[in-house]
Length: 72
Image 1 (cartoon, one colour):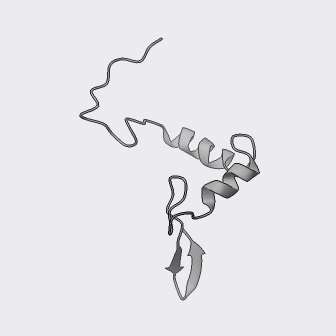
Image 2: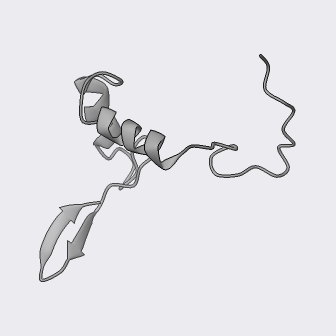
């Protein structure tokens, strides 16, 4: 079935992307496996290419707590 017309002058999120907490959790968990994306694709996805920007993500070191560094 075709989706109903969407007026793109009023987009939400990433082009009107809607989800549930449960589905976002499943997506997050799937990214830890190779079921959705191959290991090679995930390597590209998380490796910065243009400064700290990669495929849809900003990857940078951030201080957490007492001097602890972690990629965020």
